[in-house]
Image 1 (tube, rainbow, N blue to C red):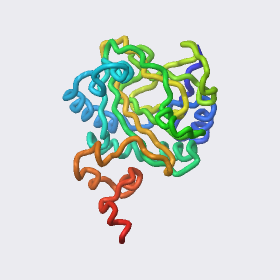
Image 2: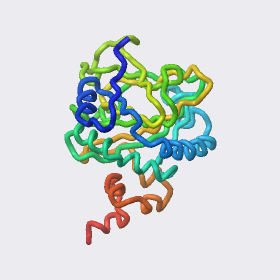
Image 3: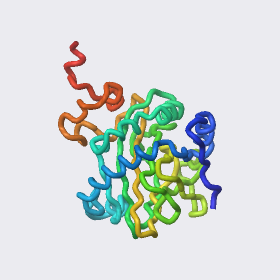
Length: 257
């Protein structure tokens, strides 16, 4: 098995970026305060109680990929005001801009709750969402916040360190992957080109992560927040967050002055 992912404190941004550049992924220890994570986790638990397992796709490969024992939520900002602070965290925005080489914008957000008995997800890269455009380089910077502890046994994200630099049609084995184990409140930062998957959950508890994707300002986002959030909700957010989401309360009228 590869060496474990590096874990770095949030107050060492250059070390964080170096680990990200070398391995394509790094764990930021205790990035978010315990009370913030507890508040988000409580709100998420309430929302998850209202959706079934495998609520993203009913049948076929989609159900297998997204997980038959996994619950997912979208329109993440609606569940807790603390999630806006997570999305706009200075460390996340700084690393996203360094990594992408451009001013970042929001691409998509998701809650991923991997339940007991879930199998390991298929290996993939998240930047593959734009594969038909045949764009090269780093298109996506991702952050997954641990709302529960992530362990090798409960479904921690499996990452192949350094795979963001591998050829597109490379071969790999299980030995190339390591679990992104981290405490609740820590975060996994990773390249959109790094090979990874949700891990298998061999415990009797659900592993919950909060995913946020950042892309260059010139790239088309995957999610339209106006659609995924309740009507009028985006008007309650700060101006900086609205701009980051590509939303203006006046819409096209804003261009007319």
